[in-house]
Length: 310
Image (cartoon, rainbow, N blue to C red; front, side, top):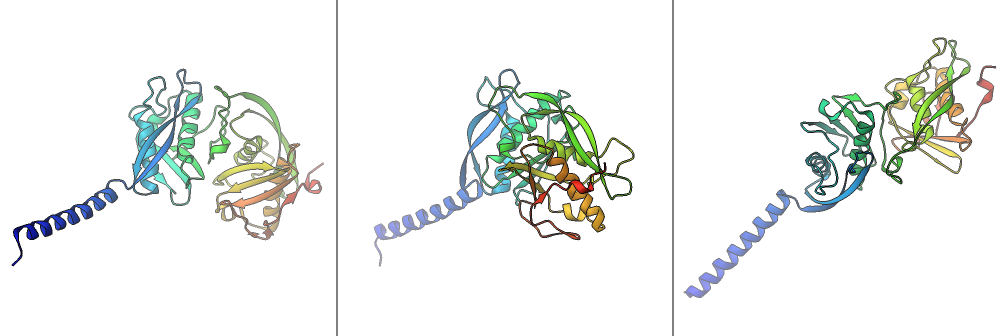
């Protein structure tokens, strides 16, 4: 017969074992990971955004991304900083977390009517989410619709490195750019010059492609790219411009061999107008692909002046 002390010891071990198991389950259910987040808010004058660290508990990537948005909605701990998301704004959806190219859909309250503040708020959301190692790029929309800058350019997917915070305010200037659109016959490219307002927050090459997606102002010219074309990122290195589209680029823009050629070279010939770009490498979701309809786009493209109308 076991002594009372023996029974008590067994019971105690059993209780501790159960407690340990329950503790593990609780830890798993209520956040088994901790993340030292980088959250961005307005500075004191709402002329730029500043970073604030905060620890966040989470279970998976989806919950972490949601928690970062919730922390942004709550506002900064530092009393000198200001909230970047307006009161009563709701997070309607958070998509594509698994792919690393997140789409954040806010309710209409996100937009203030002050375009400068709205654009900075987009940048703050992008930088806060892109600080997560599994996130490559972020696009912010409102009620399912794109957000535009003051000059009408659509704000597409942005990466952390696309947003420059080296100064307390961002610089803007007016630039004249050369864009190439197909003629009505679809066999030649015609140059159209356009004056746009640009900032140091996005590379000029990104503005050029967004303008191509918007289409020509001259009604005698054709649209080279589908309005549904999604530009993920643009990066130039060693005179090579890496243009990264969403994978459905090929489905959205394929057709006849001539049409596909005009699509490719409207981009290439427009980009190579810039002094720092000599060749263009197309990527789909960050990867090289071989076929775009009748064209192999796995290799780099140089300028083709022979298809430009005189």
